[in-house]
Image 1 (tube, rainbow, N blue to C red):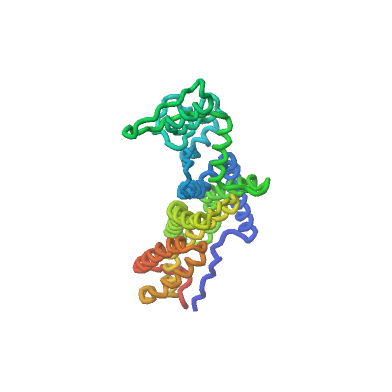
Image 2: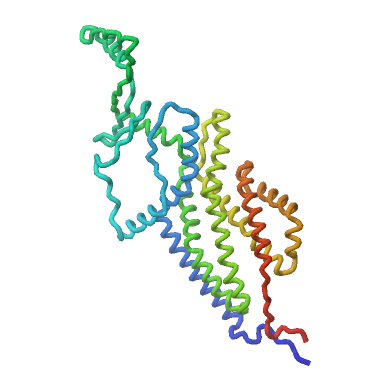
Amino acid sequence: MVQSKDLFDDSTMTFGEHLECLRTHLIRAIIGLAICVIGALFIGDKIVAIVRSPIDSALRKAAQVEGSNIQVEDDISDVSMTDIWQSIQEKLGLAEPAEESEPGTETPEAPVETFKQLKTDNEFDRTIVVSIMPSELAAALHEYNPDAYPAAKRASKAVEEKPMEIRIAAPEFQQLETVIDRQNQTVTLNVQEAFMTYIKVAFIAGLLIASPWVFREIWMFIAAGLYPHERKCIYIYLPMSLTLFTGGAVFCFYAVFPFVLKFLLSFNAMLDVNPQIRLSEWINFAVMLPVMFGVSFQLPLVMLFLERISVFEITDYREKRRMATLVIAFLSMVLTPADPMSMLLMMFPLILLYELGIILCGFKSHKPQVEGLEPV
């Protein structure tokens, strides 16, 4: 009678050696994570600006929709990855700071009729351009000093009077500009909130940057105990999982956020209230919702895994489409905020991913036999 071979007969490491190997890989992973987190601290302001950009943009658009008669030039530009890379090079001394354009080289823009801010020689001064009818100005001057300014003749009704522009400069316009900008930005409610948010965002960014290195160290420890065909499955499905997760997070950040924020902020205008979005609460929302989308986008791989271990067959997926759609709608409602837009924007991609899972299950896999595990 042939005896079955023990799985650990060929092992060349003792239990203590395995623990020592695990300790080594964990220390290397933690060191890599610490380096990335420290690096992220130097560009934390750029990262926070990227995370804030959806809500700041939504607040500015909501303020314009309210129909204010004052139009302000938007001098807050969205921060891109190019800006972050430029900032990193400047911190390390690898690049010169970006030179500002010389005065007078910028392309002039058409003047705004109601309100416009222009920089003067004094950086603390601002100039606004107001429009006034010449007849009204002449009447006001005559009323102020009749001896110096005689009464203007009334223009003929056939002649159409055109408004004239007058520039008014004052340091207080800087405060007006600041107040308007602050109304369309997130706020903090205690003194340490900005600092704690900065640290939190830097840690999350460092973890994302260091994740390939951390996964590599964990994989180096796990792969030693896997069969070749098991390692092959990881090499195939892990990149697919990372691609789906990244695709779900990016889809949420750039496609879902604009619609969701526009829908939610519209109720502030309807109820005539001024939204004051707390920075820490927005960071939590901006991190959790993309994670939810990234996890939910793993649906095709979950379907493929359940089919490969014979829990479901491909015919079950095809016959239960209606039930699957109901389950997807329920999960979309639970995983997203209480608004229909985010629910629909999660549900429709998941329905398409469900069909992708059926297609993946259609590819037959050849399960190799493990030597030494044949039945007696």
